Amino acid sequence: MHRKLPLLICFALGTFMLVQFFVPHKASTALYEAILDWVQIIYAFSLLVGAMMLIKHHAVIASGRDAKERPFSILILMGITVMLVAGLFFGRGEGTVFHWLFQNVQAPMQATMFSLLSFFVASAAYRGFRARNSQAIFLLVAAIIVMLGRIPVGEIISSYIPKAADWILNVPSMAARRGIYIGIALGTIATSLRVILGIERTYLGGK
Amino acid sequence: MGQNDKNKMGIQGRHFIFILMAIVVAAPLIFRVGLPLRVTAEVRQVYGFLDRLPPHSAVIFSFDHETSTLPEMVPLAEALLRHCFRKNLKVFGMALLAEGAAVGDDNLRRIGSEYDKKYGEDYLFWGFRPQFTTAILALGERIDHEFPSDYTGQDIRSFPVMEGIENYKDIAAVITVGDGDIPVYWVNYAQARYGVKIIPAVTAVMATTMYPFLQSGQLVGLAAGLKGAAEYEMLIGKPGRAVKGMDAQSGAHIFVIILILVGNTVMIAGRRRKGR
Picture 1 (spheres, each protein chain N blue to C red):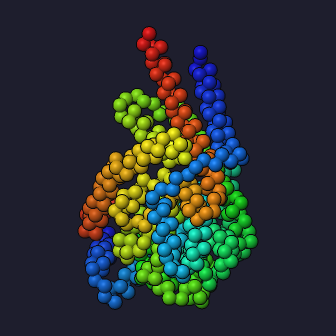
Picture 2: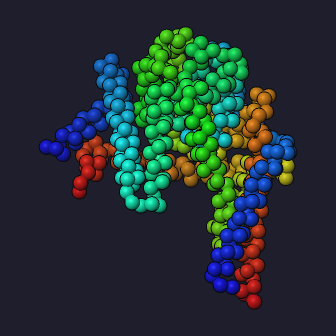
Picture 3: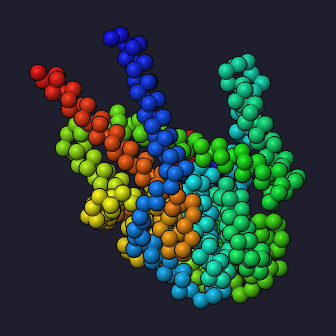
């Protein structure tokens, strides 16, 4: 029974959401809205569970003996506590501690981490982007044209470079994208049907 | 040459590249070059659409990004917000990623104050909602049901700007400022189901993801990356940090191309030496 009940709920709600799209009745719309509310409520609780698991995981490390990992876990726990207390008790708007910490600590740190990518891209471009075979040469030429075409210098060198870059993005790249999207859509439909009909049961856990 | 020496050489070479990259990016930011900029058709389409909207039309700005992409996202949001406020449009802000909430609220207030716009009268920030698929769908039914209160916790029906706003049928366009896949979900759920006009303002790497939807006519236009922001700044006649940043981006792109060419030259020369 403990497996049949979730399968039944999944079948009933899955079928309802499918049919509801074609039935714009008041009752079906009300039920549809209620389901949307419940999905968000469940999701919000899953966020809470995630946060609790993160705290638990780092609390274990922080209280352990691994001197190498301990400082990082303590720092994470301190960060969580400070942001929680600041946001819950002193507000989130402009001029608050939360806002100041977000703007001056969290945002610059994350932007810095992401910006470091440019250095690794430069290093990888030198060491890894090699014309070893004909496919690699195609990739290399396409990459150079698109890189030049997306900056003002490309236009200065030749007006054909931005046009060639647009062509690469709008024709071969787009064709590949469309193929991927059609594949994803068909895969999603197939998987959804398997879940609704109870064929795909891995989300229930176990074997 | 021993293995240790080889590693040392590698590390030194990498550091040299890092230093050069830092110089190439920083120098144009300090000494402005002012390279000419071509405005692309997709950015012009966004500008034309927003420019033709009658005053007091409602637009949603959804800040669907994290803080890691702020250097690209903020100039895009700023340029589009400036245009909307200048056109006296009603602007509603929201976020489908938690970090976007604080950024969005800050952007709206900062750019709103530049045009003497009042919170609650000319613009409003609804806040963050988790589970973006259901949030997008729920806005199509009733906005005040999905967001009963704004970011500051006040009843959204108490704000004059919400007058006559019920769901997507009262919204002229959704501008999704995103660094991931969420703009695609806006197309799949808001555009396909409710026929909402979608304007993606995305990072440069996400541009290729949006092109199929642009070609199929499911998007109004597309503003992508720092380049998209710079083009938009040119169109609204207010060149800002994106136009300035384009010089640095040009430098970085050229530097990467030079590195690719040098790397391949070294490889070919090495092969020839071995061949002899």
